[in-house]
Structure formats: C-alpha cells, structure tokens
Image (cartoon, rainbow over all chains, first blue to last red; front, side):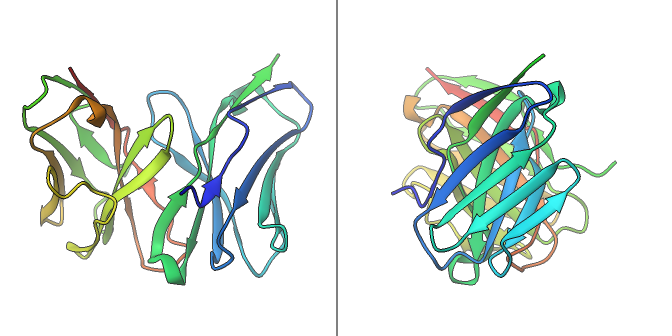
Length: 114
Length: 115
C-alpha cells in the first residue's frame, strides 16, 4: 500500500521552462514533506521541504506547494536547467510515523531538454 | 567533507550466499537508516536506529535480513540466505536529531545482484 504516490514516472521539459513534479499522499497524519533529488550512481540528496502548517516554501528556483485538503504537493522548478535532470523523490514524515522516518514515493525522472 | 560511506558499491552473489553491506554514518549523527530502492516500490525503509538502538525494522523480511550497529561508526545489513528478489540498490542514510524535520544524508548505495 503506497502511502506516498508519484504517478508520473517520467517528465521531459524544455530548458528555461517550468518543471512541475507532483506527489499525492493518502494519510492526512503526515506532518512534514520533503523532496529529494537523485543523480545516477549517487544517493538521494535533500532539496526542499515544507511543514504541514504552510502551503508554500520557496528556495531559489525551487518552490514546493502543499494542498492539504487534496493531499497533494508539487515541486516547481523555474527556470529549468540541464543540471536539474535527475530522479526526484517525494517523501513524508510525521509524529505518528516515527518522526524522522521517511516514507518515499516511487520517484519521477525529470529530463531537461537543451 | 562529511559523508556517509557504504561498502561495497557493487556486489554480485549467487543465490543462497550470505551478503553483508556496511555503512559508516557521518560522525556525530545519531540516527541511521537502511533503505532499499526498487523500480516498483521506490525507496522502502528496511530499518532504522537511533543512538544505536533499533527503533523500527518492520520493513525487513525477518527470516533472512538482519541489521545491527556494533558501534557508532558502523552499521551493517546482512542477508542470509540471499535470493534473486533481493536484487536492488541498498542505501544507508544518517541524520542528526529525532524530529520530523531531520534531514537524512544518504550514501552512494550498494547495488546488489543475486543470480
């Protein structure tokens, strides 16, 4: 039973345009949401996060939006750059899920086309 | 620079053999995680430790998998006997703290192939 879902396995975006990666979750008890980025042959690295008490968090070119009523979050990258080509994992954590323990989605492979 | 170190990077083994994967967490981190990446499930948590004590290993097949932290600088994940369905990339991660916003730092992973 996948509690965090990324329904798009892949996404291609033209360089300079906006990339939007989506993530849905099933359990409203999650308190905190994170995005990790993964390059081939490397481990995932933390990108950006958002607490459930907020609906938006921005860090440079990256913005995460949270819609609690829809149990949906999205990551916006603008403008997209070739170095953004990677697999992006959405993850969630919560007090009721063991605090620092993360539940990950299956990932979305983003390809930025020069 | 501080990083999580995993060995070996690649392992090919025959079905039925024992496999041991090792992880050196970032010095000073008190939480260690073992995740497995598969195409179908993404990143699944197998086990995690806080201050070397196991907190949750519900994601691990208990009959064949075991995870330990002999000391603060070493975490191990063992599979005995290994099966082809165990083929995956196994990641170790470490973090500092115990809150929901604890950032996990991942190693480069061990790619395991069981033939």
